[in-house]
Picture 1 (cartoon, rainbow, N blue to C red):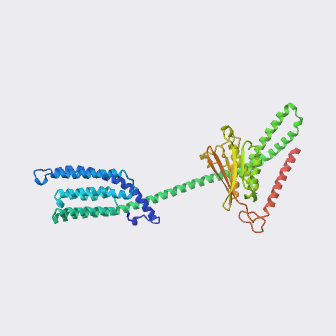
Picture 2 (picture 1 turned 30 degrees about the horizontal axis):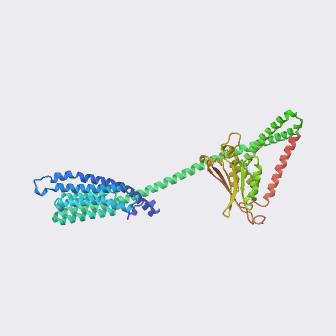
Picture 3 (picture 1 turned 45 degrees about the horizontal axis):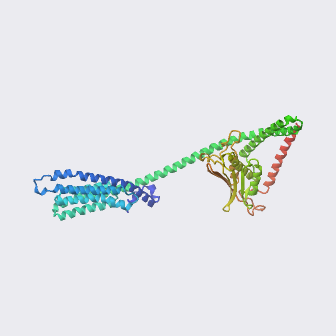
Length: 512
């Protein structure tokens, strides 16, 4: 089916896919045409029937023998026409705009039935000289105003109107004078109809293209606004974390030293446990144990703050995933009691990174799963943590930690890696664990992802680059992600200095 002239496309739309635009335009127009065909069929049936009053006025004079029976025959023609149009209206309500061929045929029937009826009425009322030929003009104009046809459809309708009139005129031996007058008005109307439809459809298509441009511009604006809002949020978070980092640096320094003194004092107190009376010894040991637990918790918090705000130098090496998981399991042996802990990690799965930091990642993620499984037995669920790994192409290894806990609510998934985000009670954690994991994995050129089915399971996916192959121990210049060979001795020296400093502080505290 030919469409509107595409030369009317707006300048910005010409650069797009005109074929795709044309198809979408035709699809949209078909929806509108279907509605207009229904309205046109109903109005045509109504006005054709109401025209019986005009017949009665024009041919109701029974004193003229030539008018005898004309009104009755015209009435029958009108009723037949209205019935046909109502049947077409019924069919139009049974189809959809996607049935383009059927829609096209029914649309032409809406104009063809009144056209044939008017031509029959011409034959009944004097042939081509009858004033009823004006009805053919109405059929052509109605195609423009009601049916929203394309130019080719309007041209076909006009040709059928003129051909039908000529057939009636010559069949009834109408005078050339009457034929000429009628043809003049019919041709003028047909010209107006075709020209009007041509420019109307060009304007409609240009309007459609402009609306498409506007829609795309609005979508791009919304995307840009979302990006601006996201950048503002990231800048605000970065500024907040920067302030937090400066504050935490002071906290770490000021809290760490007193905690070492307290730890030393508690160790000394335990040495005097034998001097405490037997009946008070249990309370004494419980009190010291509570104090040690509190001190350990403060030290862990300080350690998390230092890791989060400062970070550690990532001395990369070849790290075995299974060994890292086993180390994390031993560190969390107490918290994993009563949990079915399964490991399916091949021995040859190794990654490139800092072993201590990757172990910290595994500890935090597994601990998060263990905490999610608290009270699982009371809910009738057998607590389970599964750890597996698989290669992702030639570059990465994916470590999956799955638990069958209550899952994570959808509204929390976007925030679980935010610093200090936690759903646990006050005193049970600062919400830094997953944030630290996220930062460590970023420094390893990896990432952490989460999928959760609330009420069933949660899966953390840790993606880390595979270990270097054939690059360790070479004399080549280190790549962007590698460190010089001298970095490891420097790191060891720094660690030794920190260890000796801590030892000196502890000895000084012990002497005091």
